[in-house]
Length: 97
Image 1 (cartoon, rainbow, N blue to C red):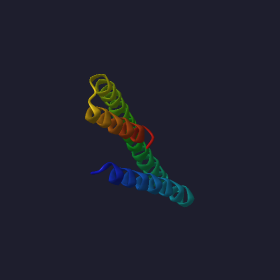
Image 2: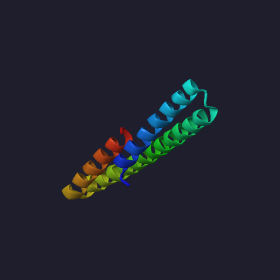
Image 3: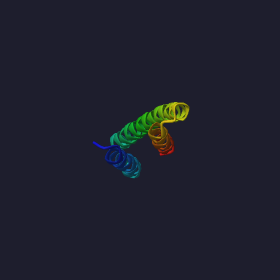
Image 4: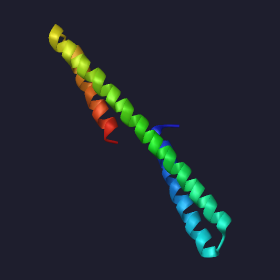
């Protein structure tokens, strides 16, 4: 499952869990409330884990990009420098998603 699909699925699940909790409260159903809370909590945890993983991957791309730019600059390798710029940009996007 792609990151975007996973994000949509878990965001939807979080909202459904919230709705289930509210409906359970209105109907006086503690089982439905508990089920909704559990569903929302699980979905929110998955979303936080995915965000942390993407953020860490972004830092990795930044480190690689900075190294490639530096090595390319020292050796006069313009292709290496360009790859470094790309990796650095990818890392910035990943860290800010």
